[in-house]
Structure formats: structure tokens, C-alpha cells
Image (cartoon, rainbow, N blue to C red; front, side):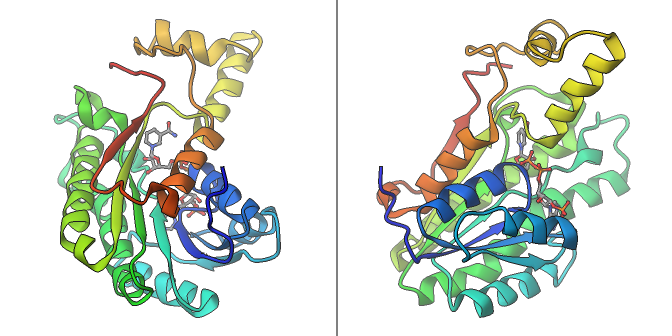
Length: 264
Ligand SMILES: NC(=O)c1ccc[n+]([C@@H]2O[C@H](COP(=O)([O-])OP(=O)(O)OC[C@H]3O[C@@H](n4cnc5c(N)ncnc54)[C@H](OP(=O)(O)O)[C@@H]3O)[C@@H](O)[C@H]2O)c1
């Protein structure tokens, strides 16, 4: 499917790795101009360099800090000459995968800044540019677990629920100005963290990595996944790119699971 994104301008906050990079790869392959935001300069430069074409730029910034997202958006807009869409894939909030008992106020505050405000700040800074471009697209990232019972990652799930609510509100409020906003809820996706875990477990147990993560998901994490496997970053990248494109022209305010049919 031709996404019709050639020469359109997209900012992927968190695009230097994982699902964000996978989305950038689809867009760049189709001729879009892409800016990738990450905190690590070397990783960002390498990630932009690995994209097809020569239209990608790396922008360094930390959107979990006040001012970080605003500066990154301004930088990206200066490079791209405007903005037609933004996706935010930051907010893994590793310290926020904690129970109510274990989560201190500091853990909640860090989750607020990383998981929720990283998205709020980035989208808020991008919206005037999207409106100026005649309307544009916003895609945020929550998690399938916002629809499930996950007491062991409470601050994360609470803040990700906020990301979904925020996105639906943006869709309603900015729809009349031509802006669409959708929220993607991934299940277990084999980005760096999970592929590293697959290798680590295989090493520790002296077994082959092949099939190991699939087995652990079902037998040890008790995940009920219809497809019986983790998703691949490219599968989520395709969804992001579609939602960012005008091919998804009547889709807004949606909270879309991409989780292989995960019930837990
Ligand atoms: N993978 C899964 O199984 C899974 C499941 C459900 C939901 N999700 C959600 O999906 C999203 C993407 O996950 P992923 O696995 O693709 O993540 P990832 O591989 O860890 O990539 C995260 C990207 O965001 C950048 N980043 C992180 N914090 C940042 C900050 N404060 N400011 C700017 N850039 C920042 C990272 O680069 P630097 O480190 O250099 O900054 C990296 O480019 C996350 O929101 C995650 O919570 C993931």
C-alpha cells in the first residue's frame, strides 16, 4: 500500500530505537522526511544513519524533563521546515513497573514525568505546528496492560492510562482543526529489552534462544497470547506509519491494541 507520505515531515520522539525506529524506517522507505529524538547522541546519529534515503535527522533531547520536549520539537521543526505528524514512543518507565506497596512517591513522580508528561509535553509542543500545516497526525504509545489487571506495574499502567485519555481528548479538541490523534497499545514486543532477555535467559539456562521467550511468556509469565509469540518491532512500526499517514484519514480518537490477542 502506498502510504502517500513522500516528502511529508514526521517527528518520532523515541525514534532512535525499538518501535519508534521501526516506524521511522517504514516512513523513510516511503520517502518521508523524519526527525528522530533520543537522549543518547551516538545512538541517535547511528539510528538516523541506518534509515533509507538521506532525509533523516537526529535530534537530542530528554522529553521527561521540563523544556526538553519543547526544545526537541523546535529543533525538529527547524530541520524539517514544519511538521505533518508526531509519534511518541518514549515512556517505558522501567522503575514504574512496581506494586502499590513498593512504589514510593519518588517512583510515582518519575513515572509521571517519564510515562505521562514526556508524551504530553511533546504533543503539546507539536500541535501548533500541526495546525499550521493544515492539520496533521498524532500517535501516542500506551500499553495493552491498561486494559488488564497488572498490580505489579501499577504506576506504569496508571500513567499509560493517562496517555490514552490525553490522546482521546486531543482528538476531540483538535479534530475541528484537522488534527487526528490515536493511541497504540502494544503487547509484548521484542525490542531491545525483550531480545536481550531472550539471549540472557538462554545463556543462563544453557538452552537455545529459539522458542524460549515464547515458552516463558506462556509458562512463567502466564500470558494468554492467541498468537503464542511476542510481536516484532516492524509489525508495530507498520501500524504507526499507517496511523500517521492520510490512509488512516477517518481514524481518530482510537485506542488500538496490537498485542497478538493478549488477554492478560
Ligand atoms: N516493548 C514492549 O514489549 C512494550 C509493551 C507495551 C508498551 N510498550 C511501550 O512502547 C513504547 C516503545 O517501547 P520500545 O520497546 O520500542 O522502547 P525502546 O526500545 O526502549 O526505545 C525507546 C526509545 O525512546 C528513547 N527515549 C527514552 N526515553 C526518552 C526520553 N526521556 N527523551 C527522549 N527519548 C527517550 C530511547 O533512546 P535514548 O535511551 O537514547 O533516550 C529510544 O530511542 C514505550 O512507551 C513502551 O512503554 C512497550
